[in-house]
Length: 218
Image (cartoon, rainbow, N blue to C red):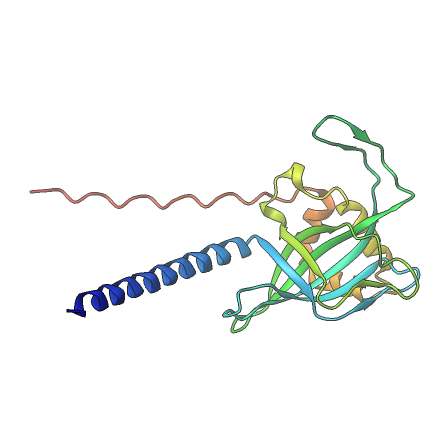
């Protein structure tokens, strides 16, 4: 008499489990696709401020779902000053303020993923934190978050305006700063030349492969 309700309950449980698996699979696919372009990273250790230094090396780990093995990254945080005017959506203009510290330019340039060979990448972001510029400060603390997006996927108008300034700072500090020196040694010459000239090609969306010819129906 009570067999049908039990069978119905089992069917509902199986359906719920299948739905959860499907949702998890869809989430995983979406996460992996987004991570190919957008990196959410966390510093693996404190990076203390050094008086007079503007370029800092940060070893970072990727934020991923608990069941995934994270990749690790070499990155630099570089102080910059806003030496350009900004126009907001309403048309209001914020004049350049080159005398003031504005934030850190984030450049992620080397990727280390489990089971894969290290590879050169170039992802960038902006960290607007106002601390990390005085004695006793940390530029970034262990676990501190930064976000970076694949540079070539950005349209030209969306690319960071601090890039020329930050590259000039890196070159200026390379003789005495190992973070700047290692960055210049690691980033491929072609990438560096493209960044210096501002002629970095945008990534184009991959075109769909042509459909196979239809078989003739006899």
